[in-house]
Length: 260
Image: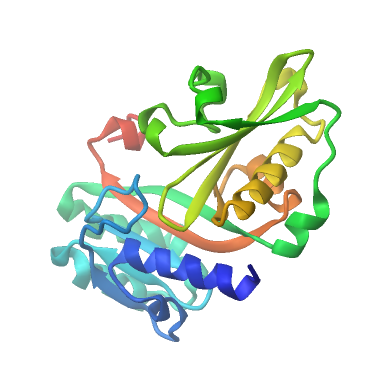
């Protein structure tokens, strides 16, 4: 699987998520679409979107509620540079549009796609035993310390994990979930006392290779402010793929951290 194929798969997935076509993300101009539910979208998305902005670096594709599209389009037209659409003070203007729906800017994330050459070159060194774990082997690991590697709310999507062990004790875990038909998302946790030893890189990289061998594209997500996670993605052989901003109901404390 080469870079072109991986990008094509990611663009198609984003098109399912945003109710558009893959080509829309490569257009010179920004594009705005009404959001609809799709059985092909990432499983955890709450569709239709109130508003989501996605960019692969060429333009911005917006997908959202029909009654907000005019305001969202005007916001995109008001900012000359793509990057500024995802930054303050511009986002304050977008929030004024979203207030009509009782919503606000919420999640802002970097998504990473694998560089195949790097993923299979790095391999990642780890001073501890590494084991491949199938679903039945990590069924009892839905614990707070492994909350990034495994998702208790979506257990049926978790497909594969890679664990690091010291004398039989699990000290690090990377897991991947089948968030869509072609791509599996990787998350990783390492116990605090074992961090800064390259364990996260070794586990993430190994799981990416195992995902490829099963015929799926691994991808990785990090909040823009999570520098440690971004560094882990890059050291594991991933490269920036796309960025995404999603609005959620402002009164929902689960999404807004109690600020609604």
